[in-house]
Length: 145
Image (cartoon, rainbow, N blue to C red; front, side, top):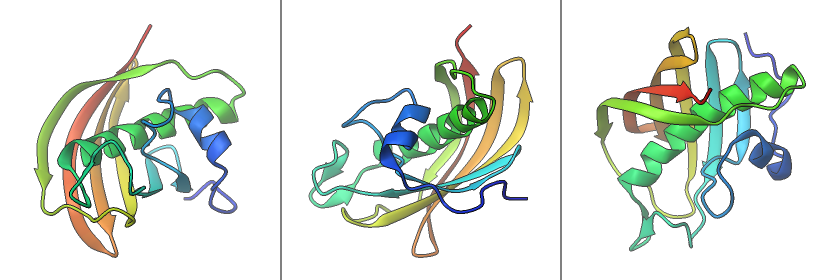
């Protein structure tokens, strides 16, 4: 069940929920949040670091998925009025990029939490644009202690 009353689009708030800073932030909307799922949005700027020849490259898609995981952690801590710890990608498994979106496109990234134990989280992530699956992966993230 979505715990948000409405989508969050306040960039300042969202940028405070992930450890990355501009120009490396790859999430700019929060559409859905629950204990086990999050859906983020990201409109790809034309001058994004991962844009080449008007396409958003695979490393950008992977970073978008990882930052969506970080956004889940950051928002969970925000709701509890606590500062979120920094997290790291521990492993990426089965990363598949089906196609690259164009700069200016709007991504929608869904992350489902498969397991979360002792600061290590296993997730399944899917990035879509206009309903089309662009990329998918499983990744493990770990919180710094």
